[in-house]
Image (cartoon, rainbow, N blue to C red; front, side):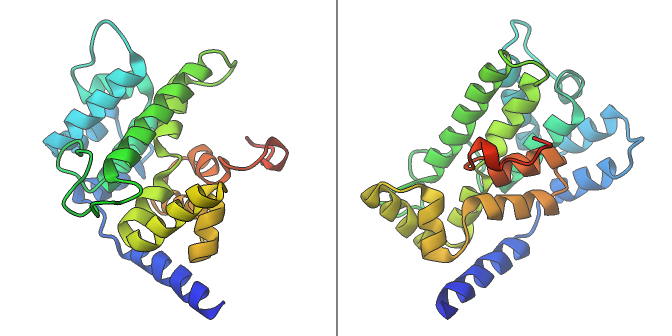
Amino acid sequence: MTQRLTLHDKICERVASLPPAPVAVRILEVLRNERAPVPSLAAIISTDPLLAVRVLKLANFACGQLQRLVTVSHAITLMGSDAIKSLALGLTVFPLQSVPGKTTGSDLYDAPITLRDLWEHAIGCAAVAARIATQVNCVSPHQAFAAGFLHDMGRLLLYRCSRRSFYAAVTVASAKNIPLSEAETLAMDINHATLGEIWAGRSELPHRFQLVMRYHHEPTWMLPESM
């Protein structure tokens, strides 16, 4: 038990010590001022050309419009500052200079899960969540897209901060046919849902996104009333 608790603490410390991207710090600073106009957020995102391009790609994917979004300001106006802010902050956590290949130099040759897998899972879940939201009253497809993209951010954090233990959990989950969150808890005494919620709180994501990240594996009867 002591070893598990120690690993739990180490993982939390590693996550807490991950240096935020400078653009992420500036995004949080401007949005702490509720009067901050859309152009301010757009201007900050645009200071990082790669981030701006990726935000626009996600926004266009989320909106699926014939007329493509060409500016970050337009994306914020259409999707809302909460969604764009959250997508941008999530993108800064991916340690990529471009969309990853199937493997990267940091992945083991026989890795059970790669950075590319995590990326494709995030995009796929975002697209499905947005499509489902079109059939549900009072649920914004744009918000659902952002929530789908972010919901497994804890997996990415485990990949970055405790990769071998995360690989072990993925292998055990597959071999024993148990949920990955259960295998993570067995291996590390923490799972990606809990870790994602911790990151979301520190990143000042809207509360609804924090709840999605914490409860996305729980049965309906366990969800808070606010969900």
